[in-house]
Length: 265
Length: 364
Ligand SMILES: Cc1ncc(C[n+]2csc(CCOP(=O)(O)OP(=O)(O)O)c2C)c(N)n1
Ligand code: SF4
Ligand SMILES: [Mg+2]
Image (cartoon, rainbow over all chains, first blue to last red):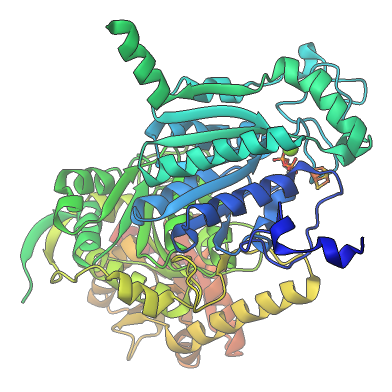
């Protein structure tokens, strides 16, 4: 059978989302950012909200997210995306606003902004790429870096005495009454990609329905920062990150309230 | 004639914002300007005009909220006092770099550090020379009365949108806290979605439609040639501002031998000093810069051709005096340029200023 015999509409299982631009992504091969960009593009397309969506890109490797998804974008200062999104959303309540942030951006320099945006229950979506490292600046320790993990600024491994503990910020966020949906996902296998898409879609639907803040962490790899190849990076993530950052929903206001309701009766 | 009221400077900023069709205010409490947000919250403009008022978690957050909202083409503002403006510096630089219109009010207090809550003009350099990183300028308006606090809100927005550049009202605790008669402006409706689209649709993030490419608000240009191009565009705007937007006022300068240069609260003191000096037979005048950037270089250079000396009077250690020196130097004039001021929240008295004229300009 010739290749051209296989490439037929009826055989199509996966195609490039229309909202992904033709620009070549600058991400390292194996990086999770590209996969999550694709999921976000698919969700915006599926929900048909291109004209209503405004993305806020961070300072970090995904600073150029605006080159890849065909929607209006704002590029925020390091850590300030939730404040920028708040500004956009408050004066444009008809828009669907999301931030896309790394762990240094969201959990370190921007810890105050994310806490308060979530606590106010801004009707926004937060996509949080936790790769346990500062990818963009060359692999320094992030607030989420694991104990013992070697980085450019923890060459002997992260030491709790000196550097404190890896921050489970998503668990903190889940405590805030302003959030309606808080989940931790991954995107390293076809099954996890599908689950992750479901979560991101729910988050965007919540923003459309004005349910408060929806927060989706994606446990991610940064093979360049970790100094290992993409395949080993996935294994390292499963073995080291998943035990500390377990994947799954932490809060789903709709589900939680239903369960609470059931318990009451 | 508009509605007349007796109001505090800070309250007037809030009232003027509502009346000029402002879409949003984001701020954080700090003395001596907290009345701006308090007045807005009490007025509940969200019911009246739909204006959003939000108390942010910090000045860092408020300026970034302004960035986001301004990036959608809306008319938005913040206010703070000196330490808060320092915290905003990064955000202001981003706003200037991304060429967004907005209004920032700085009701100055004495510094450095936590300083004092008393009035000061020590943020002149910070406001007129940049303040944050990179080559950028703000349009800086310096009101000298509660009336001008009112008028400059509308003017600030107008200039900010004309140049897609942040505008700042640089005032101080004295004018912010002082009560005076003010004629308020008439209500202007907020821009409709259609007006925002037609005015800012070419650049603002109003939602990507099929008839245009997507818009991006950014100040990032990794390629040096693009970065320089962006810098050039900014510099061209600043040159145009210097050509078209200089505002100032003179008082008894026609026959003056000596000219005081002072803005805001200091200019009010100096007006009295001119009267006292004239009563003593000294020919003293006053030039009051209204725009601190663009600075009235030309009118000072013109005066430099005929007067014997200038004295900058400022509530700081001598900041604007450098711009007066530059203007006089450009005129190749030999007129003396000196400075008199008080710091730490002390407002100079008119008599002190006259003494300084005698000692620093006439006897020297
Ligand atoms: C105010 C400020 N401080 C520091 C930096 C430098 N900086 C750029 S990206 C970054 C870390 C980004 O890490 P993360 O948010 O985890 O994103 P990643 O690259 O890993 O996706 C830092 C420290 C900056 N641009 N601005
Ligand atoms: S450095 Fe890390 S986060 Fe950045 S693109 Fe490369 S793999 Fe991705
Ligand atoms: Mg990271």
